[in-house]
Length: 346
Ligand SMILES: Nc1nc2c(c(=O)[nH]1)N[C@H]1C(S)=C(S)[C@@H](COP(=O)(O)O)O[C@H]1N2
Ligand SMILES: [Mo]
View (cartoon, protein in one colour):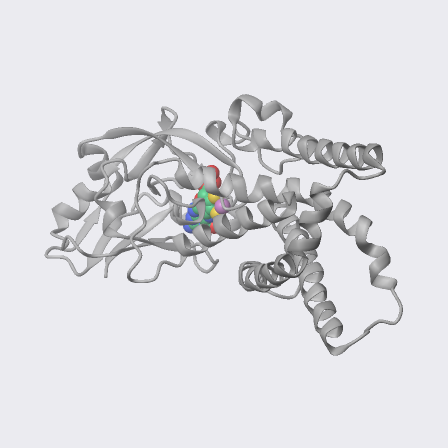
C-alpha cells in the first residue's frame, strides 16, 4: 500500500514536471503559488528516494515467487507474469535511473528524461493491473491478524525506519533549516557562490569570455514593434525590483535567493510586444539542452518575473548567469535561463 501511494505520487508529480517543461498549447501553467514546483518536485525526488527501501523490502518478500515451478501454469498465468515483469523491471528502472540522474552520472546510452517519462506509463499501467488482480487477496491479508504478527511488525518498522532515514538525510536539500543534515543530497542550499548551488558553471557552459564582454547587449527581437539592444548600464538604469524566489531544480534541490533586476514585462512593454506572445529566452551558451527556454504570457506578465542583475545583494556571480539571467516564480530550474543574450517574441 505504501508503494502504491509513493508510485502514485511520483507519477503525478512527474507528469507535472514534464508538462511544465513541455506545455501543450492549451495548458497555461500558473505563476503562483511561487513555491508550487519546489514542493511537487521535492516530493517527486525525495519521495522517490524514500521509495527505494520500500521496493527492496517488497522484492525481498516476494522473490521466491520468481523461482516458482512450473513457470507458467496457464496462458492467463503467463500473462500475469509478463505484467509482473514489466512492473518489477520498470519500477527498478525508474528508481535506478532517477538516483543516477540526481547523482549526475549517466552510464546509460539513452536520454534520461525521455526514458524515465515513457517508462512511467508502463509502470503505472502494470501497477493498476496488479492492484486489480490482487485487490481481494490483499484486503483479506491486511484485515486478518497474522499468526506471525511480531515478524510483520518488525519488518514494517525497519522498512519505514530506513525510508524515514533516507528522507531525513536528503530533505535538507530543499528545506533549508535541515540543510546540514542533507548528507545524502548532491546539492545543499547555502553551498555555492552567493550562497546558492550551481548546476552548470560558466566554464562548463563555455561562456566565461562572452559573458564578460563589455560590449554585451540584451537583444529583444521577433514579434515586437521596436527591436531593442540594451547594455548592462541601460538595464541598471531602468526601475529595479527585488523579489525572493527559489531555484527549484528538477533534481529535487531548491533554494531561495533575493534577486534584483528589471521586470521582464517592463522590457517587453518598451519593445511593444503583443500581450499574447510567448518569449523565447536564449542564452550566450552554444549548445546544451538548457541554453534557452520559453516564457508564456502568464509568467512574463507576473511582476515577480525578472531579468535578474543581482543576487543576495551582490552583482550576479558569473556562475549564476552574469550579466543577466531569467528568474520567474513557479518554474523548474531548467527554465531559469542564465547568461541571457536574446529575448525573441514568438
Ligand atoms: N544557459 C543555461 N541556463 C541554465 C542552465 C544551463 O545549463 N544553461 N541550467 C539550469 C538549471 S538545470 C538550473 S537548476 C538553474 C540553476 O541556477 P543556479 O546555477 O544559478 O543555481 O539554472 C538553469 N539555467
Ligand atoms: Mo536544474
